[in-house]
Image 1 (cartoon, helix red, strand yellow):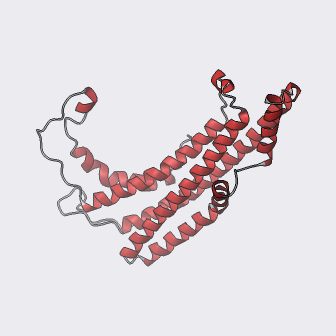
Image 2: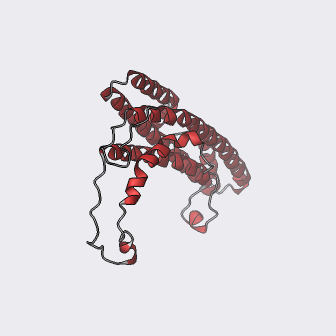
Image 3: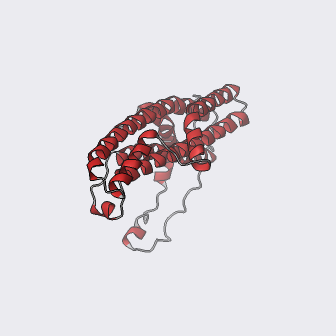
Length: 253
């Protein structure tokens, strides 16, 4: 995956700042014992309990991690799509270029829908933080972000819902390629194999460009979403427990 913009990492950087120092401080000396087949030691001080502030940010780390995983999967779908394996096992099992294309396009649609559900859940949680803190500006901003996400993903959600509940996902070029695969395999019309290859490369190029454009648009939205959400979460974070690593007054974002 190409290097993501700095704005994308706004929330992660703040989570890192709020949690990592104290977590590293309390790492047990026998942390790697299980890796080498050694029993854990019972010696040493007990791990310090996380503060309310640290738990708050670790919860948000989980949310960010799930969204980031979907972003990585979408990029991986593009890589898989454009690298059809020239393996004998594929030919042995009768897996064609058409099967390869369709599988990864459908996987992309599914992962995009998963990303949509994770983003909407994330923003609902941001709304709850704003409501609990009587942050009217934050609530208004979160609602606006959620509306943008819903509008941006409307087409893909409709396509995915139709694929799952009504009919198999289809597109003219994939249908044409399926027909050519059938004619060259079952129909043994070898003269059509060149046409089949041309149709495959044409469909591949179309979907490659489509996925690149989709991923770029999604990333553009996240570059706007994460910095704004980070401001809301930062100014409404729980005040650290006195005496902890973060006992200083929380800076308003």
